[in-house]
Amino acid sequence: MLWEGVTVRGLPIPINAFYKQLAKSSAPEFFLDSLSDIMSHLTMKVLGFEAGAAFSGFNRLILQDGSSFALHEALAHVFPGRFNTVSPAAVELHGTMDLLQDAPITIALSPNTDSEHDYQPEPESLRGDLLLADRGYLDLTYLRDIDRHGGFFMMRSKAGLNPRVMDAYREDGQRLKSCQDRDLQAITSKFPKQQRCELEVEWLIEGEPFRVRLIVRWNPQKKCFDYLLTNLPQDQYTINIICLGYKLRWQVEIYQLCNLRRTLFGSKMHFLGSSRAQLVNILDSVSCTLPPQTTTPSVFPLQPHFDHRYASCEISCEEVARLV
Figure 1 (tube, rainbow, N blue to C red):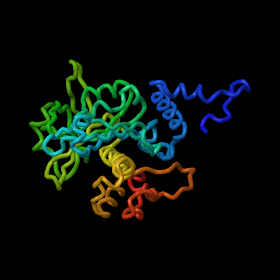
Figure 2 (tube, rainbow, N blue to C red):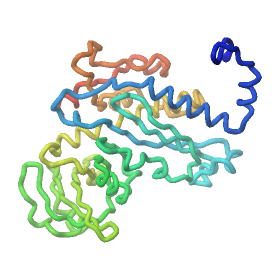
Figure 3 (cartoon, helix red, strand yellow):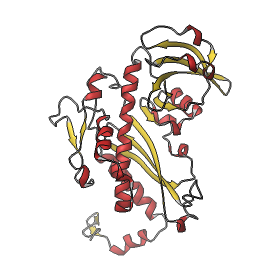
Figure 4 (cartoon, one colour):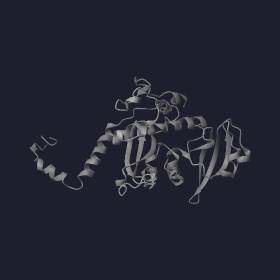
């Protein structure tokens, strides 16, 4: 039994005393807090970068992502969906992951109508950390607060944003003079498609200027420009390093795809319909290296409880990290 043999000052404690505590309405919250504390002590930093390399100076690399999926329509009153006609009942799975620990920090399941922004880490908790998130989490005030609290971010930007462009350079260092001190939407036709460029952009938030770097890259598949916002210092993080480093965010996508959804919902999910080649392409973009003192191989096999079709897939952990 769980409490068998428990004593206080050498005297045995009746089991009924514990059962009475379990009957209290606060018992579930107590056990949740206890379990969270225990689990926090069981995690450790298992991945990292060599000293002096890009991204080696951050305490944590925080990855944020959320994914939604439909439920039976009978649950619509508990878990309402955003698209009533197609999926009247749906949930959103929010995950915050520490890449260096290769483990989730928080996991939350909410109605699909809840805002993703409500499940982001607090800005003050990101001091000395680097947050990587997709454009669905873009909130300029939130990014401003991260910057104010000494945190850093790399986040995809929506194409419709229209900050003031203060300065602009191509990746080869040539200044784009026609793009200086102009609104972004007025100069998109002047961006080069053969190479990336970097803009220094500014918004006014609550009457105060907020300046960040905006990396612009032409996407030949979608025939449009992709945008990436960051406050990483320009003298330490080039355009190439930032674009390579953002690929680290794929690890939380893989974790949600192969671990959380499958663990929570098992064979009822249909997210494993992509081909093996597509999954391998995603895995190849993951970029994290082991600390130099470890002897573990630089290729990590997928965990054995994954779908058998992907049991032989492997994650390359050197390609990007070697470059940054």
